[in-house]
Amino acid sequence: MIRKNLLLCKLIRIKTSSKSLFDSYMAQFQPHRETCPICGGTGNCHIHDYYGRSIIDFQTGRKLKEDLCIMRVFCDSCMHAHAVLPDVIVPYSSYSLLFILFILGEYFAGLHTLEQLCERFDVSAKQFHKWLALWNSHKEQWLGMLDASETDNNDFFKQLIHLESYSGFAMEFIRLTALSFLQSHRNPVLIRPKNARYRQIVFTPDIFLF
Ligand SMILES: [Zn+2]
Image (cartoon, rainbow, N blue to C red; front, side):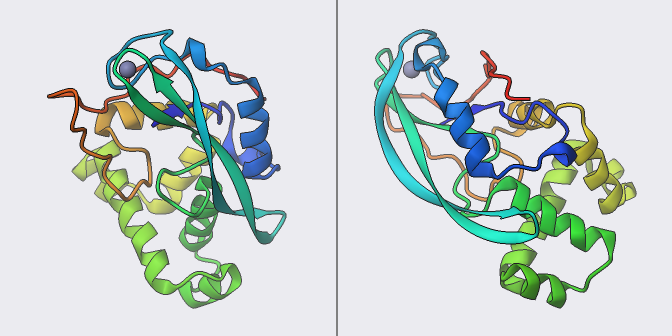
């Protein structure tokens, strides 16, 4: 996959749906300018194909399920295909980043019980606890064990949604851990070429929607 910086703004400012942001972003995306996260070559990618997936999102107080058309690009240098995933999408998750953060934020603010939140957002307690465990694990990887234990979840949440550029954080998190923030599954192990591994370091060029 190729992660892209879409959220070059404060998350608190976002009022549109993840699908609308995604579609606006992909309308401007230029595959031939990308750097391959496997071989590191630039200028060797072209559109390979598209696949459909749905995303559960949250907008103006309502949960909604929308369809996305994901582009895959093919690198002629190392012969790998990459899905192009702007950072409103959490890899392998059916829920949008904004949905997951919103429900966690509501919980950290302490205004609702877990039961109330799960009912309101129509998610299982099991799912919620998975997100909470990921949050705690990734918060610790980002801040370090000591600082993480001393940083209140609600404070860390507020820091994230008020960052001038959420993408700046998301990109550095990937560079640090090789995983996206709140990504639960590991990245696939590559069979070829020998010793190849997925490690995205280059995220440019950026497209500015805000
Ligand atoms: Zn390549």
